[in-house]
Image (cartoon, rainbow, N blue to C red):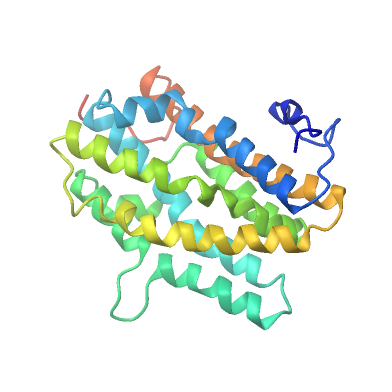
Length: 259
């Protein structure tokens, strides 16, 4: 890896001046992207995890994040349609089950609604998505469109933020339970379940891209897909910060009653 200059990956894309010659260099580049661009660095998350937000601001975060969470099965169904390979579809299918659940079993969307209910939000209002920020809707829909329109390799690569998810979930669980008296172990059950689900999903996706990205151009595309996904997550927090920390709530968006 010594001959690969990773500094260029702080730009919008990695293609300029960075050549990834093998799978090991690809993995190092992906982990560099996560270390520098994952949304755990965003100021809104730092406020959330350190107890610096009021209840209304936490409600706004949970409400907007619901749109992302509830769209993940649609995105994953889109990814499945890209593959004629049955084994890949079987592997990917459990992601939909993880979020949607099954008859008699709870999924991630239901666990997220436990959080919003525990925060005092009306479930019908949350599910309607009427109060989400425009940037939330645009970012999430852009993610679905990316998985529909780009190559199957890029669609899988865009999920690799899951490599870095367990650390942010651990930080969120401990920080929110410590600092907010309006959350408890039950309302945080979504994040606890993802501590085991996310590594399993990430390991498959990482193995897949390392095996199937066989040229420097394909490896660059994989990295840029991950950069795109980190931007999808980051811009949602930008919008939350602008609306609910700086106070510029757009017309029609959720207005907290508390705080």
